[in-house]
Length: 431
Image (cartoon, rainbow, N blue to C red; front, side, top):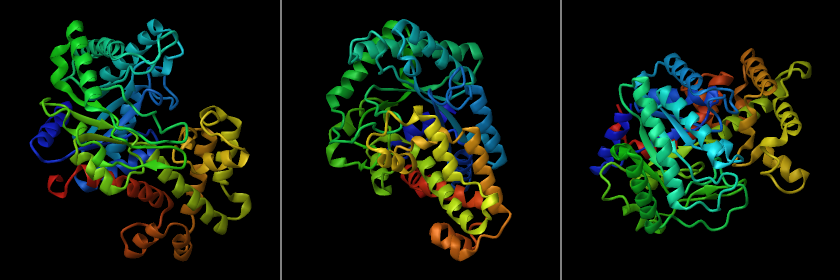
């Protein structure tokens, strides 16, 4: 599978602007939507787990890398997507989860998470050591970041040999990573990475890899993470402006196997996504944007349930979500400022979608299943579907979609994914 990404990079380098979108979510309904999208469009799909979601201890999703791999492969099989079209990646692999520890301890944990992903067969590994650990000088220098990345690369290469993989992984490096999951504060003007900064990052990593004896993996580094000037916060999306990257987009022209990776591409308009890929951002990420779409669908279905289902049998899904988030505020309270009402709106509707961290909660998951079961046991009147989900209504009327709540919710997620498919895969490149 790593060779599939390498081949796609070479296709892009030859002048055909293909890319790959990375779906960064562990929610089963999002994964199912992504698999059916790839099956129907005739494309590969890249599913990435972050070091927060999935690690050697279980992460916030409760899954280790082998467990998440098995979940993805099971859903692919259920959706009849050939396994060779499923690519697994690990995102932000490094000391992020343990940066409260001294670097000596945090890096030992980072070695463990990288080895776990590689041994489980993940094909694309993002080595991210850009975050400072306890006692570090802030900000970290390029040399320190590169030295730590080289250390993790050596661990990954050894894990690959030890596990007897048919193909070694491919890698992504880079330090100018937007905050995972969107900005924490209100955004000001974003400045794209300069070509000089990108060159310094490359030079520091190349030198560190040579010192660590792993420079032979350089040709398997498929992407450098840089800031193209895209981001989102709770209420605003900064859209890509290609006029601000005219020099940056040529910074890798002399690298035969390397393109760019862009993070925080959620909510970008379709034309801006296409411009990103054309301008050599080979990997574009989407994470909160897909769970945001799922939340939209579930809240709309809850409004329909309120009209159709007797009060004693309702799921009260939005109320359950609010109750759990208030009882367990760790994943949102330091991100959402303002008074109570501002925080309430942010909890439910923010672009940064901190709600996604709560979807695996057993009480919320139970309410979600009750909602879908309640509506699945009745016929949703078409005028009511039109009121709350007009796009899905139109497809039901046309016979392109079944009037089933689970199918309707996943169709809304697929709508969020479609612009990424179109940006990465021109029609002539699909099977």
